[in-house]
Image (tube, rainbow, N blue to C red; front, side):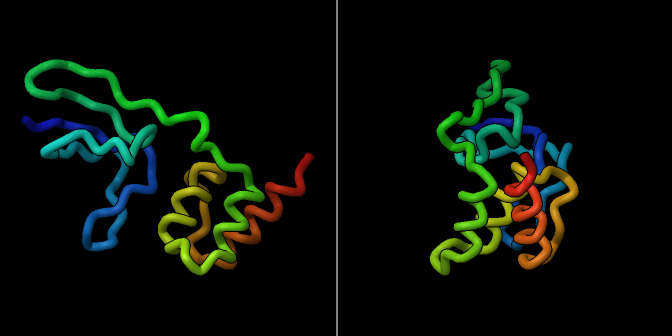
Length: 109
């Protein structure tokens, strides 16, 4: 069984480390549930299907993501992906700039 998905949000990376562009359609062996909320299922086994919705418990605050920046066990791309969920398409490229943007976001009322 295969599933066809369309990338709808930034933050998904190929095995080469390069980000997969929003709008890209992929055929995969199984549904990538770890990407929840960042793709939509176009078809699965010949049937149309709804996309997996992200769990509200996965939502992180700016403070939570800032804590990830200082945790050496968290890979940079995991931190950047969480930051992108808060900052959107204008997420800076460097870790220092992302931290500054998150600090700005955390201090806004």
